[in-house]
Length: 297
Image 1 (tube, one colour):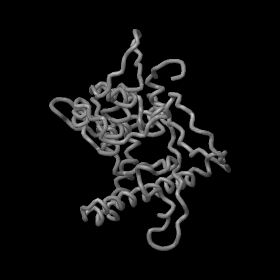
Image 2: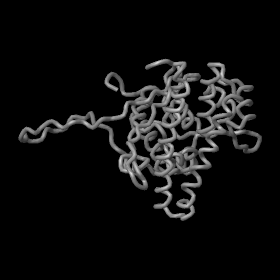
Image 3: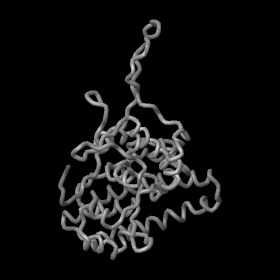
Image 4: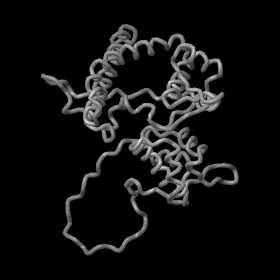
């Protein structure tokens, strides 16, 4: 914002992705289509985000991630001017301030490392996931927990596997046409994904709506389709995921049945840990299976 007072939608995405890694241009446009944000437009139609627009968007994203509020509730709070329900982390101020009295020189502080913003996934372009870093297991029950993330909201960006209980908690909901536009799939391709149970939708009236997980599956499937991998071939991932979920369910159900926040948090942490181990195990076994074709590294 050095040369002008506003940012483009791409610049807003780069600005906020460090704080909200799952943010995409599609989600920003969706929030605009639902009337939660209303950026100014240039004569040629490009969005112009000023500082109040960015703070408003940041507040909405906080409410989605931290409070899991429905879209209607967030919209009502915005309409009533309730933007101070949570404490937002202020952006560094560019306004000059009166310098304080000189103090004794101190050792320079080492800035904390920030995760690099992840670029938005373009149509047909899927970024390969980074294998999560899992600390070596130690002996005894609950091994490896000490070195794994304890809080899913503040865990390191190096852990590529999100909390399994986070899915479906956002307000992203797209129609069939919006999914096709966002993923580049054809209507027949999406129908095939639904036929094999890879993508599911909910019906309201005469319209089918797809949540964020369904859109992500469709987007990933579009990447596979670009390499000639059809929906029927991808069913193996659904079968494997269902079997894995069955095992995890047996391990966490005793905690979830306790119906108290502490037990649910513990169940979430356990699922995160199991998911991280599972992701690394699948990657290792895939390399092992392809080793003779890939040759020595």
